[in-house]
Amino acid sequence: MRLRREEPDCGRVTCWGRARKMAARGGVEEMRSRVILGEFGVRNVHTTDFPGNYPGYDDAWDQAKFEQNFRVDVIHMDENTLEFDMVGIDAAIANAFRRILLAEVPTIAVEKVFVYNNTSIVQDEILAHRLGLIPIRADPRLFEYKNQDDEEGTEIDTLQFQLKIKCKQNPRAAKDSSDPNELYINHKVYSKHMTWVPLGNQADLFADADLRPVHDDILIAQLRPGQEIDVLMHCVKGIGKDHAKFSPVATASYRLLPEITLLQPIEGEAAETLKKCFSPGVIEIQNIKGKKVAKVANARMDTFSREIFRHDDLKNLVRLARVRDHYIFSVESTGILPPDVLMSEAIKVLIGKCRRFLDELDSNHMD
Amino acid sequence: MAEEAQGKPALELVQADGADGSCVTFVLHNEDHTLGNSLRYMIMKNSEVEFCGYSITHPSESKINFRIQTRGGLPAVEPFRKGLTELVDVCQHVLSKFEAGIKEYKAQKEAEME
Image (cartoon, rainbow over all chains, first blue to last red; front, top):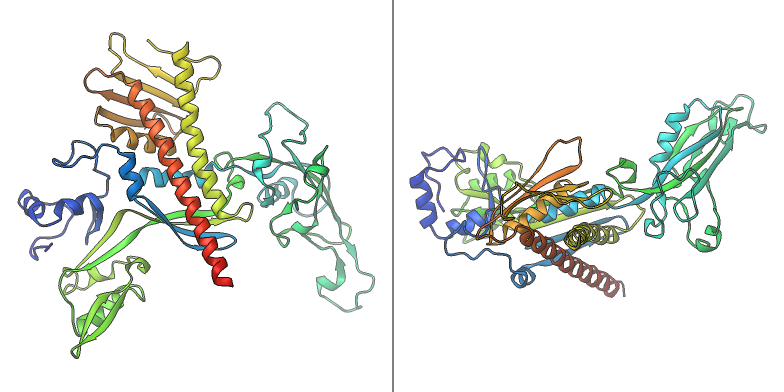
């Protein structure tokens, strides 16, 4: 599909131009399936394949067709990160999963801090805020939500931790030392100093579960001799919507699969310039009959810096687009739950929401 | 005719008097774009639906107004129910495909280790 050189690519297409594009091979397909990155704007952003929009297309929902086109490819997974592709789904649903991962998958975090003694330089509320943000390694699926009016926590909805530490002078330090590590004992309060205090039958239930903060080396406060911290913490189950400390992901995001099409063969010096306009590894130069020819090797790696639009001789020879239904998800967990479990839980949360309204509809109709 | 459930209703229907049930505004409490947009997409894919849209009345209140208008006198509750059921089916399929993909990846990693 050629762009006329004298027409500025401002994102608006004239009637004549659109008819020409529609008639052009694949013009409609492109409108339906690609998001085009133009020089001054982005085109075809919204999903338009609803029934009645395109003559000759049957766009009504068909579960069988969806199941046939849909696939999930896991690219990379380790302890805390997961990168996978979801192909054949719409933005509305992919975004719903992303939003749920950030805000509606429950976790356990410190909610109430009972301060028995805090003579450190960190104020009570700052200390409590910091303690709340520490990720706690406890499976939230084993706990219930706490009742709002319940003052004392029960064993099914509360986890207790204690932090009791006192800083003392080190009698064995050298006389003229100035290193705090030598002079003082316990002057840095880390998350490893938090100890679990079992409530009720938790000692039996979670005997082998290692309930502690995810990371041992989170610095909570610093002390000097004579200062001490003695707090009791109650952890409850909550969701990210309520407070960001309950969010189970460091972040969860997606991007659409980039697609770079060379509208004309690009050779020689222009090929070298083209290669520099994109991220490394996207464009490779092949040597065909002594001439350097550019070829798109791996468009997936590109970050679309739009550098190509700064070169007047090259900008009309390349089409930058994104595939509208191919989502490259990246989920990074804080360590509470593995990232694949998080994604499964997020999908279950969406199912739960729909089921809740279906039940409401059914009970409304019974009345 | 406005229907309300007992206690704290999560779903309310608001209908103009005299209308025939083919144009209904649902008020969904404690919901936002997460369910709103995905449900709107599923319902728009239904060819019986003439209009489907949602709006968040005020960002401080977590409720959405979800409006459905059908053609041909079909009661609007039908596409609403159908959209919810279809969304559940989509999610279940995504879940099974995702878990299968993860299992396959883990098996492949195990095979590479050996």
